[in-house]
Image (cartoon, rainbow, N blue to C red):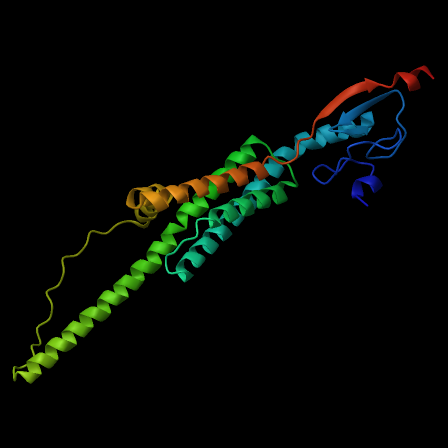
Length: 254
């Protein structure tokens, strides 16, 4: 049985409202209704519980939103890591449908953090976090494959040097001990500048992919939009509307 049946105080975020209220009693405290009453969505409640719920709704909003953001950011990080790991394991073949999963994870986590409280600012945050997670996943993917390419170039360079030494030995020439000329030092870049540049490149990755490969880029953007749409829809939460007071004329006249 729902805790709201046993607890006389309304439990904001955990209460489940029935479509119809059996009998003529309060949905929360189960006390008989006499004179006036309120409606919370489709449920009938007494004035005391309606006032408690109204107060709880107002006082819980800042805490609920902050907690939802923490949960959402955590889910976005998990989605980013999962997206990147799968792309790396598939050797660069990114399944764009993972964007939908990231949107679902972010939206669900935010509603878990807020106990079901949603609204426009929750929806905006969920959509932004979904986009950030999917787009920023390109950074670890780039770093991984850039490292792999660097290792391959080094291996190829070593192979060429060994072949050159073998040719020199076969021709009777003295192997050259010349060292490659030192390269000019690259200008140093601060960590903050590097991180900012990488972050901007990551956030722009869905559109740079569109320029590089119009077909796959357009499909990726479309599916990313669907993922953001799912996060937006989930983060709408449950709406709590309090109507009243209403007067029960049959009871008041009795």
